Length: 459
Image: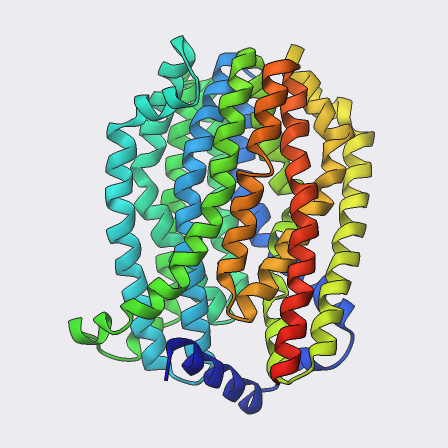
């Protein structure tokens, strides 16, 4: 029996043996409740980066804000890898626990934890030693290059701790311990929020202070995750050895590989956009940095949507209720569109207050106002891609998610960004990136409904 067929049979048994609450009652209610609750931990996670940028922006130096932007673009790559590994952790552990196989869940937990450490350590060393060269690839130069390099070399040091903490956090969510899972991220945000002004202003460390505050927040996240996982006695359920761990490698790679590949598409696209924006000087990069930190917090519900509707689609799929699967997709589209419109209206109404709070001037202010006034509305198209990803992952077509996301980051972004960067002003670069989402969502949604129809014929 293949790996996919084994998990298909396992998923069917879970639906039969447990109360599949998503196969009845209102689909829209399920979508709203799951998305709102799942978004809370994402808000806490993204808020750390937003706090760093906010306090740095108060110093009123464009090159400092731009340095955070350059470093953040590269750190996005490492975070995407960590997210992909945590997805594998959550998927494997939750399926094992759902099937009442605690021993198997523990084996997966240990194996993925080791895999996270073995993956993150060499990446950390590679980024640390190559920091200056990597930042220069984004077109940073002069003092901004030096600042971004120093910031990156400080923050990247504890990437293994953050990756390990995210993996343990996925275990907590798999154990239905969402409360403590979120407490860990809230703790990290609180630590970062307290230490940022102290280290940046009181001790006068400026950009280095923000980097050290981030390190402390990651340490707090790691210690909190260790504490709550030990409290939940997850690793007491069985013994393990090398032979039991090696057999878990294939399923780990089967999930982590596509998840990492899919997550890497966005930072690849963002890196190209950063390099193009950099041609318009530090002020433009500072404005772009603000956009990329506000949007995940403002639209955290949408970022959480793909994972939130996963169990809704999964339970209805294996209950052979494809009509409810289609209804889940439609309800998700309606909900995400409504949410984005409401948030975009608020961003538009408070646009001047927001850019003033971040001390944005010249091109940075122009780009900030552009996003808050116009581009935020276009996040609707990105939501369609997130929804399609959830469907593809449920019907074992994860490669479709990877293809869609890489098409968006390359074919449907780079040509437009390149053309407008060469012929127009900085704001047009962001228009070029937005166009990619418009083309991508059409392909994603059509492919999504086609996948559901194909499954419907086979069950």
